[in-house]
Length: 155
Image (cartoon, rainbow, N blue to C red; front, side):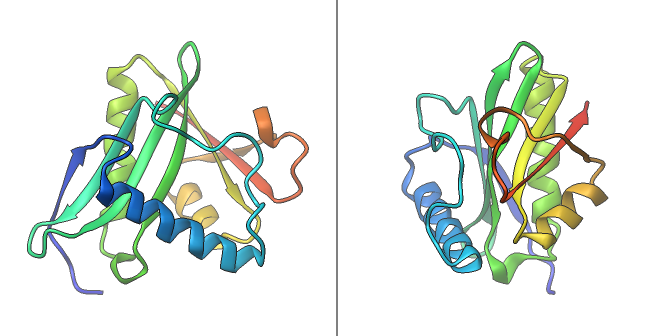
């Protein structure tokens, strides 16, 4: 994988670049699960996402990755819509976006990050484990899901 240089910036949830990334993520997950009802609970919206980050390729100007934070409770937030375009995986952008989200969490006073990924996403499970997240019991909307795997990290 060729290294790319990129800039991570905050974005509005409804910004076109972010919408395109989230639609690509959705299409990939629909294909992996063979259906479009693989996400328990309400989908994130501009009203409940506190932080949204987009990584932009410095050379092409294309949005190549994204990630968001949604407050769950005092001191706790959830990572949502973490996604890297397939052609940019292995470039280091996923780790950079994750670290930027963690820094944002700390600046908001959130000391615990949780996330949900799925049973058909072994690459995501490996990534979060490698990055210091540990598997936890299913939480929130995911408690009764047979497709969910949940993780947490203290910051």
